[in-house]
Amino acid sequence: MPKFIEDETWISFFHPQESTFTKSVIEIIRQVYEKQTLRALLKER
Image (cartoon, rainbow, N blue to C red; front, side, top):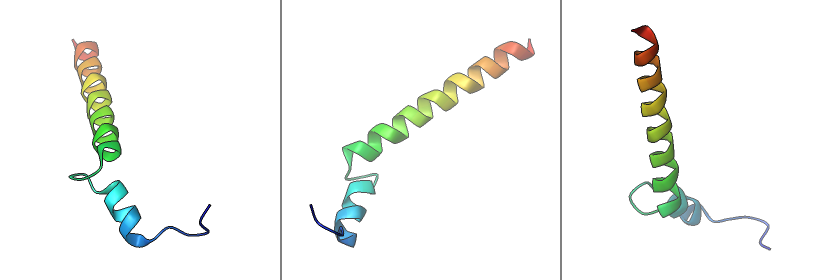
């Protein structure tokens, strides 16, 4: 196991246009946010 990871590797791993991991995380956060917003709107009524 390497003692360090090169900056280019981190950048490619977390770059939203390149990384499927990052795209998945962003999508999950977006879905949770939308559901929380929807719940908040429904509670206000």
